[in-house]
Image (tube, rainbow, N blue to C red):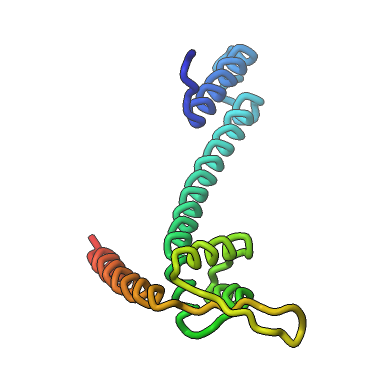
Length: 169
């Protein structure tokens, strides 16, 4: 089975095919080189589209990298928030929003459950004045220890990245 060409090469192929088609429609050089010919308009449109696709791919790659960086630091950040004192899940979400890390409940609750299973945090049920009892999370001694190690690792990472960003060419 033939291998599918990369997206960009498919666009180049489509561009060349359309160019050949319009060359057949406008065989004389004067018609072919006139800026107002359909051929040139289509060629220009295809080139603009190809450039836009390239920008979208680069933008996607950058956003994907940002997303992976946030995911990689989310456990550490949540442990830092819980370290500050007993906290309710919606308070964690609110705090994350304050520091421009938008996280949805569908991401937070599985993460809290995983941290609980790893015995890094625990929770207490407390009565609420406005509704049902709420789970308030706090760090366990093991969670404190892990957080201290994560802080050391984070500080070392920040220092390493800072050295690289300061060394400009």
